[in-house]
Length: 75
Image 1 (cartoon, rainbow, N blue to C red):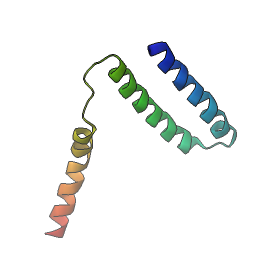
Image 2 (image 1 turned 135 degrees about the horizontal axis):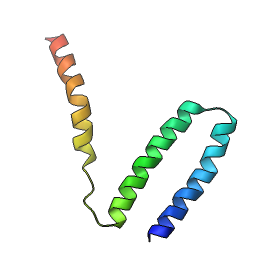
Image 3 (image 1 turned 120 degrees about the horizontal axis):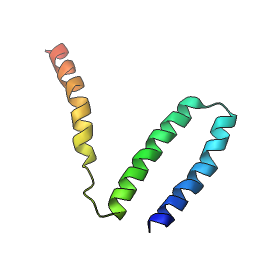
């Protein structure tokens, strides 16, 4: 299953990345790379039957300081 997963990711990257490089879309390429790495991480964890981290916990941790700052400003 892992070789199939690797092949699929290679095909996606081979299809998506060259046009982004040709058009010098560096920011889009950076976002694509970040999302692709996250997708690869979650996919491999799922295939290997390892515990997959809860994404809502990560989002909550990232945005909690922002939420508190906005709450303090509005009070």
